[in-house]
Image (cartoon, rainbow, N blue to C red; front, side, top):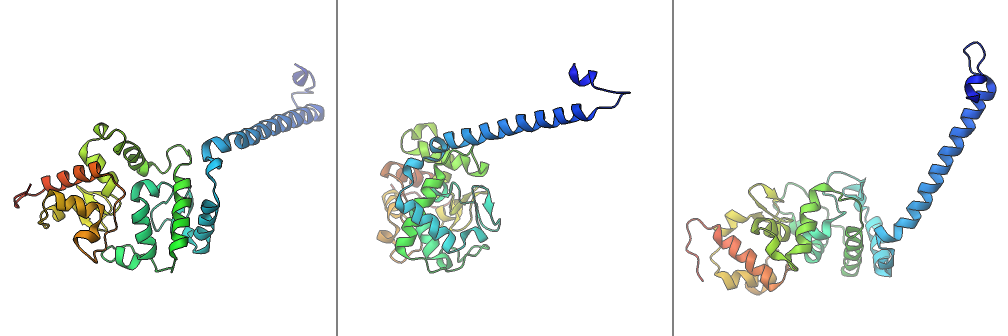
Length: 249
């Protein structure tokens, strides 16, 4: 080879070194330029830029206005004090996010983790939710991994609930605030303890899940974004956890 022929006494010549330098630089530059081009080519597909509405953009500004990144991560960036928000829309749902954002002192009253009252308005809350919904739909190779089970269950629970076991379905709908067998987040209490405390019959519990205020005015739990069918599955599951109380039908 030319490079070998240019060696003198086992040492590389200046000409050979320059050749290797320029060849390596050009190849690296070509790879970098191609990856940059491919990134921009794939961006609309994986980030759904067609769904970047004015409300989504306004929601991103709300995220920065209140320095949400100081405590939360999103798409891998931010603080690690509070949960990652990349897929939070699947874990919590619109109504839970709205209640947490506007009334954190109430929602986290019994939680070790606290969130300050930031004074976010209702219009800003709607914009923030729109931003989090758009972010949640970004194809980012299943990050964060701990939320993937929520994403899967969210997408299946209304269209093909038969593919989900009850524990998986209930945790997707309720695990953002409740725990069961050490799974979920202990903000609203453990489902087993709740099952043995409440005295609701099945229909009342369904009504409570869909619209808590209709059963207990003033309760902190927000309405849940679930269908009547899913609310029935959740009610059956909770009632099945009772150990001492008679289930009324």
